[in-house]
Length: 257
Image (cartoon, rainbow, N blue to C red; front, top):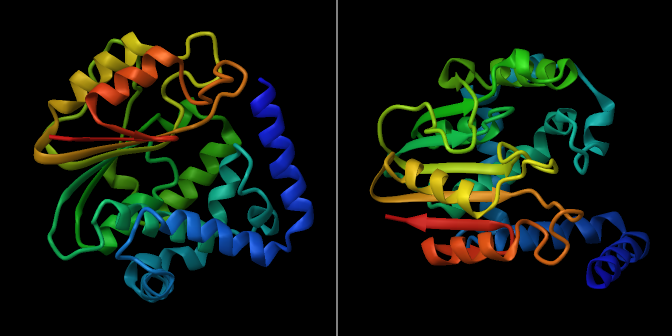
């Protein structure tokens, strides 16, 4: 607990000391570290090309929300209305998986939310499918944001609606080259029923059935400092489970078939 508190204090101090432009450069350098063949110049070029493409035409109809840029660190869905930030985040996510290359893939995004990752993958000419909760099961404020962004990004028809629950197969059909889940909440995040090793073991065995040969599963977790103060994202048994099944780096797990 002491280590977590000290780290949080250091982060808070750095935010006060470093100018915002310096913090932003440091942030993008960390993001791009996972993409050795995708530099800042490539990211800037890809973002500009996306915004000029048909994929971005619907974004011009978004309802202006000046607070969106200030909400990036919150859990509220309004943060996803910061177009420049979330477009770039998802361009980096795609590049880290090699999806910025020419070969067309079939991609499934679990917890697709606003649809940014699906839109980026389609921009790169991949076949996309998403999966997320029905709008009616999401709080009205967040649901309104997701509806607007799903329509603006033209991915609404590609997102299948359902619920991912412990010890139940995910209700999807077919096989995919890449399956992703970013900022995961379907594991009952920050609740008494937060998934542990047994639930994750079932999920991994189930989702692997939907991966094609040489396929990739990429999971990115949300932190839960109160429940898991040592490892932040899960307990020791779950951490070991992920290490046995693939590669684990801080908040990101990757499995290859």
